[in-house]
Amino acid sequence: MSYSEERTLTRTDLRALAYNHQETRCVGRLAVPEGAGPHPAVLVLHDARGLGDGTARRAHALARQGYVALAADLYGDEAYFPDPKLAGPTLAPLLDDPAKLRERTIAAFEALCALDIVDPGKVGAVGFCLGGRCVLELARSGAALQAGVSLHGLLTTAMPAREGSVQARLLILTGAHDPYAPAEDVETLQREMTAASVDHHITIYSDGWHGFSDEEAGDMRNVPGVRYDPLLDRLSWAQTLAFFDALLA
Image (cartoon, rainbow, N blue to C red):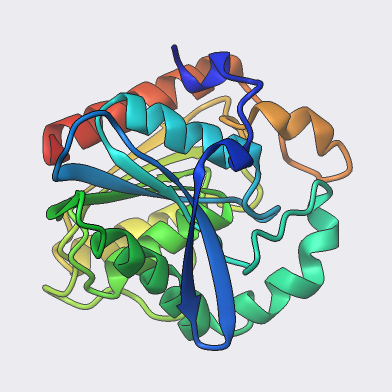
């Protein structure tokens, strides 16, 4: 059963995992595969709306593939805004403080790696939109991340990767029509990763828009440039699983 077939699953169906970052109490949602472990693991990073049911379904789907999966909480206390425009007051302070956003992501990564059932040498991350940016920031930080996947993620950074600092191999999946990741951002990212000697792979879907893998994109008609594509959803998820399979399994 794939994540798209589990539409009744909600974040509360997964075990809560609390961790702290500075003054913020974060509550992620953990999905665990069968068996005693230790297992490879994947950090799942949500979009600008916060930790919602869609993120939990991704984590659950990864657990079915044999990964411990933590759906991280970037906002704190599992904050979720069905209308992404309402997330502004919560999101803006993180975007305005790139170091804090990076550190918030690292806190989630460390909480996952600290679990007894996790093999800390086989940990990946996947993120969507804001979460895609966080995957890249986690990699840029030099964290012991083995594989990172960004789906329709934000690509700009205030702290570019340094030569030899990135341990992760990266897969960046983006849409040619995504107004939040225009061609110049893709080209800048490619130059950054090449200069830093990062093993990276970029796929540009010619008919892809922002949110192409998000089944709930239809609920965001008031957000320009967002469009769900069932084909690209399946393709991007297949690429994601193949990437993790090759590097973490």
